[in-house]
Length: 336
Image: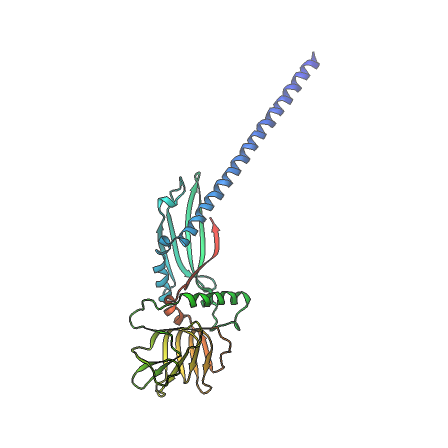
């Protein structure tokens, strides 16, 4: 009788243990399922937020809402940041069940003084909300290397590839856009020689063709603030800067882009962006100073009598007139 009672108790004990283990396994299995499902929902929500970042960067109707703030920040050196730039996504660009259509942007200097665009996007997926914060560098990196002269001699191999690609892009796409009041556009094409002459009372450009001694065209320049664009696929055009007013000096500012040779005969000071897809020749007796940045893609080295100083204050005044001055690159993506 005692044995039967003992067996019964043992059987019940074993059954309870088995049931407990089964229930525990079911609980653990359900918990793992919930954890995995939550992780999947969390990852999916993060992907949706990240997708919104790429959407804003790549869809013109959204990014054009940020462009005016970028241009204002670049042109105004007194600004240290622009915050609370609001972009609203269309319902068609939201996933089913996701009601977070607001994207917030800000522009500021990052830890290394590069200008960055920060984008914040939230998304919900199966009631899991995730925020993604992305930092994006704005300007073409060549302008923020802090080097006064950009050439094959001043760059590493990776930077050389970026430089060559950028110069090729400019060759195909550069033009004179609408300029601010006070800036004068000069377009040169199909001339063998061009002389920009600083006279005692005025500044003129003389255009020459086919080795003719007399200019076939003379243009009067009303300001020292210019966008000079000289196009020549053969790179044989010679653009000369000549100063006849030696007492007051020869000073220009703006953008100078030349396909061919730049010849500087006298002392010369330039503030802005100088781009020469060809050679630069400087009279040995002349002193040339460039404040801003110089791009040089030529066979000859620049002579020692050119003093070049990197000056972002001068660069930022004029960079917005160049194509592809905005060259976005994602620097970091963080999930909250």
